[in-house]
Amino acid sequence: MSLELRIALRHLLHRQRQTLVSLLGVAMGVAFFIGIASMMQGFQRDFVARIVDIQPHIIIKDEFRTAPEQPVEKVHGNAVIELRGLKPRDEVRGLRSARNMLAVLEEEPGLHVAPTLSGNILLRFGGKDVSANVTGIIPERQRQVTHLEKDLIAGSLDSLYGTANGLIIGDGVASRAGIRMDDLVSVVSPVGVSMKMKVVGIFSSGITLVDNFETYVLLKKAQVLQNRPNVINRINLRLDDVEQAAEVAAKVERRFGYRAEPWQEQSRGVLGIFVIQNAIMYSTVGAILIVSCFGIFNVISTVVFEKTRDIGILKSMGFRDAHIRRIFVLEGVVVGLIGMVLGWALGYAIVEFMGTLRFNMEGFVKAQGFILYRSPKHYVISGLMAVISATLAAWIPARRASRMNPVDIVRGGG
Image 1: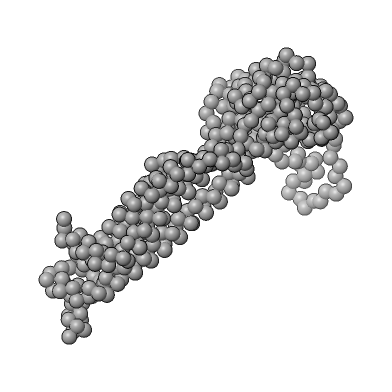
Image 2: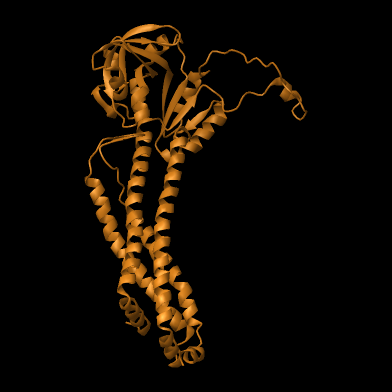
């Protein structure tokens, strides 16, 4: 053990109470970072995984990202013009040349395609009216773009073929309307078409918004309900490489003109909340570490004040400024390292304790307890933050101690 380290340890042991408080501050900051990061990132990763499973990676919609350019704007693009009384042309909604689009997309490697027709419906059952979204699907194609079949808690996708008017609903829709398997439900569309449909499946994706509003029927039945024969208004795409969704969506949109939304854009609002959550997490842990740094600064500053004569003696014995500075910086490093180890142990205990808690949680997702993500990266980041902050807190008093003049110290003592 070097002489500087031995002196640093003696200084810390001399003021045990203050040193212990500083250690606890660092340990608490590290532990809270590990616990909060495990909880928040666990929720975030679980939500993204569910979104990627239940929804297509890309949705091509029967709409355009920007309004079409008017003829007067094409002719006088650079002129100062004003359009008034513009009456948009009423057009039948739906993807034009859908068959050609499907044929082209199916030729792309690593791309799975499923046409759908989505719209609004009203479910009537037992005197209750429940609004929902209905999506017309082709079961064998839907299997390729979503994991809907995996989320079924009753029934199957193939039951849509075995029943004249089959309907698959989310468990949230079933709960809201009091619907059970094999019940007959009246389904009314905005265009006035009404059909009696039999519930042949109930699914639970774990995403509240999906489970509370989504329903599925055969594509042909959806076209009858919406009075839009041979029309589709969505093309769902699933990629072998989910990370390529944004790039492929941009390419598809440039080629066909229709709006193509990757899963990141579909969930932009929630992903934005995740950014705020991470900012809160780092701010909270940073505040705890800053408070602990003030404790370290106070301890070392007090030691410097008390050991002024010792510093003068050490300098008169040949200790250089760098040696003196190293002694007090080592005190901060020691507090940071010991606090880091204690924080790791406490953080591990907090995470394991949270993993044992069981309760029903329903928000963006449904869960039976905390969704935790355990990663060595949390320990590395928290440890680096603790050691660096403790070292910086020790640097200022260490620098002041190294600049002391031994002659002035002796004169002051005299």
